[in-house]
Length: 438
Image 1 (cartoon, rainbow, N blue to C red):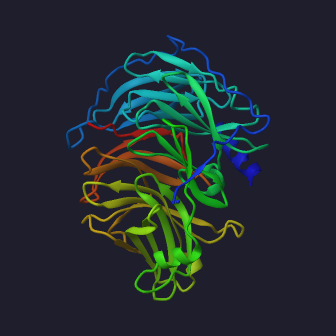
Image 2: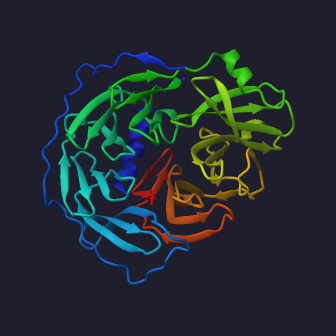
Image 3: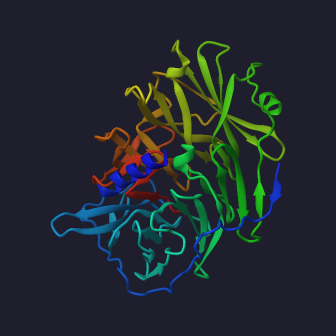
């Protein structure tokens, strides 16, 4: 599995009651982290305006997009940062290479790392940059597969895939320029999940999965340095908890697992009634109680194995009281060569919960759209529209960035993207979106 993963990466590159756990120690032979001092004047961003402005039909901060641009004539590589709606080019940053890049939550900073080079942190307002030496954590045959900003923007979480040892999770402190080893962890490639490392929304606590076959997450508090393990309830407790319409589930899985401040998302299947139904719901780890039914998926297929549903992403719509989902539906088999993947955004226009998605009906779904962020006022979301599969059959071209009204499902705005943007589940390559708050 690891070999196929790394081959795929090469192709893409070429085109839960809490229990305190003792802090982990770095694995034997793990290199120590070193950090270089800030370097000024490296690849300073330039700013210019777009000649064709198309304002978004609402007020407030607009989404910001960071996208790779390759100039074939001069063989130069840039990361362009664009404000969607006004289409202002906030920055165009020349880079030597790029493998992971991420905008900060407020859209003012950009992290970028080439495959084997150092990370570079760009301040888009001042034009200054500084280098983060990653040679101490990324060996010659390892790859940086995960980068995410803490809500306070004081930390970056960095996940390293090591084919010859355990994957490792590190935190970089932007104030002290220090890299800290957190734990071994299971990357999203191994779990099949969109996000195996998640920052909580209100503080600088990061959650992650240590082992792929043991889904419960571990939380690390940056203020205290304490690890907390969130174990799964036993099977009898889970069966009672997940009981729906007086029917016990036939099977259940932890696909998304814990979302800090939301709870754990579980899906389970019931074939005791017709049609076959898949339920997604939230429950509280600490109290082991049901928080909310999120959604139900129905199919009339006789062979239920031909309708495999997974919710890969979930956003809480606080003002509405419901949720925005990113759903994958799989049918067929990879070994037989007839695997079919369908992706769509799903939500309830009325804001009531739970909502039901019936196979073949698209009233509450938007096909081939990956939600990325919800607007500050909660009325719309920004995401990516997928085009067809590429020649390899496992990646999808990302055709555009778009803004969608949650009440009407109307596409309010759409911005075409270059050919460098791909979706290779569970990661998106070449682009990143944020929607800064007020």
